[in-house]
Image (tube, rainbow, N blue to C red; front, side, top):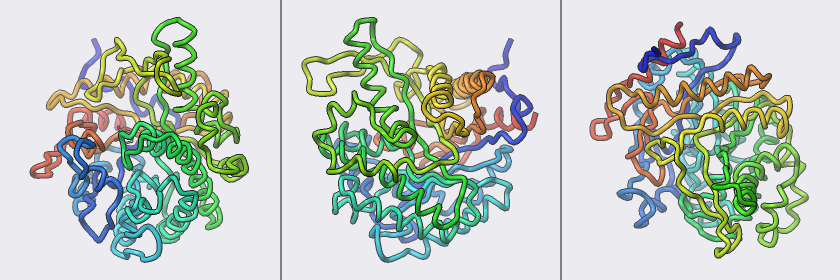
Length: 442
Ligand code: IFM
């Protein structure tokens, strides 16, 4: 019988050079009140009643700002090859433009050196959601100028640390930035407005492409996009449900992959969004479609989708599914990862190397941590099945190294391989951490 405290895979099951890593994000772990960072839209979103569980914010988070060395040690000791981290725009440029916070740049400089000293490849994300408040005041992602502001910030940080960065991606999960934050209103800035959403859906990709151009101009390579994907299944076999699921897939998955890899948006999504798009949006595809070196998949779950004819476009709703769920209420569906790996490799981005840049679950199991081990194991198995079918998968990053600030869910949801006590900030590796170390050593 399989040992529930051990992974079924070992490093030796993977090709030479396959990258195993862990991922985190600045606002979720650093502690935004330290080191001269400026305010960001998550601070004000969290301070507004009803947005975040217990109105918690990232002010202290895991205090990684002061404990980064021990956190890097944890990754080295687990036998990981790479660390996918993000840099905070608001930490480096407190007003989003202009004045530079040297202390912020120095922090990332030390952090990157610390990774290299421990044999960890630095994988940088340039934007993982902490938009400086001053830019939010100017319209944030609704304002086309954000592409230029972002490119300036990216140029600044990459000039400082880019020589030591192994791989970089501009924006983590554009869907969350645009749709979750501007249509569903569940993330900062909390808009529920189709015009705001349409603009953000486009500008986030324009900013992505502009940042890629800025990094190429500096001579950097190994640049990618990190997109999140959700498998959309119709709630039943009706034509209406199938059409609704297809539309969900268009908005969530095919919009971003389509913009970047095919320089087009799916018709089904445009049917609702086009009247609200910024002028001349079609002219931006040359920038949005700037050539990439790899694509990253962040994958967690599937959604069951039903038609909702009584509501305005997109006239669909999510329905709770029957599969076992994580503490986020997300169904566990590893076949979805297999689906997106093969779809990207064969249809959406043929021949492009792929990385699973995030995969993991929220589970509060304090000791055995068996659910996390089973979840990761099942998804790694799905990834291996895809590789056996010829998918050029080159690496796998667990979300996340540490329990951290899970955005609107506050500190309640525990995604870490390492437990964090949010009173003492003490770290305690979980069973999944030990199991991963054994798998990577074996
Ligand atoms: O915590 C987030 C992360 O910031 C982005 N990807 C999904 C994770 C879990 O919700």
